[in-house]
Length: 283
Image (cartoon, rainbow, N blue to C red):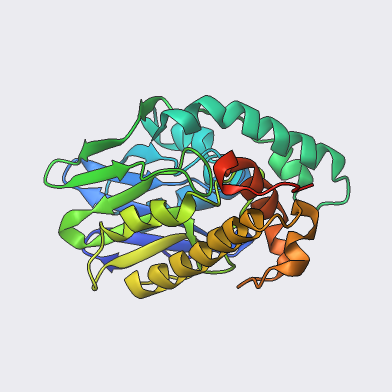
């Protein structure tokens, strides 16, 4: 059973094997804030037990870094286990939680052989209750925690959490360590590098960075990941400007990741580029 490990003063992280998800607790004199809640009610009950074993204080608020199911399907369980509390997210994420969850439930309905099918389908959705557009500060009594929407990247509604006095940044899925960041059909590959530039501006060379998935990293790791995402965006821009058709881009481009990871990135990149940066024909 994972333990919450203190990675900075009154900041604890637990890493769970399923999907390499990280759950973070930030403590203040008024209680604990939990950032992300895992991917099912059953898994969230395990997290709740781990919180109790830590014994660092009452859980008083939740934060969802974005609308993908593996980061908020534990919300209802946390409320059942610890009582009513605010659930924070960006306006975009809150508005798209139900749509995103619907796609997940549909996927698991069809995945009849998946070992976690029943576990995921048994989960009750609990959407965020407190939203913001650009930035908000949470008051934990003797500590302030900042929630920042740095721009579009992994989704249109990503947030990062900054704990200034501990020099910790929680990157959500804008930063991943266990695999390259996932670029899906709802991602913004052409804007992601600039979004990470803003996130990097919140860091020092000593910042502890908690990715959405995987082991803890530092500012240099995020800089490297930003560089790779920048190469992907600039390669898409270059190919489109030379009139390379979208269905040939993966074969023609010199990519930093395996091409099979970049199918959505290329398609979306071509769609998101302004017409002035494209040369016809592109299809």
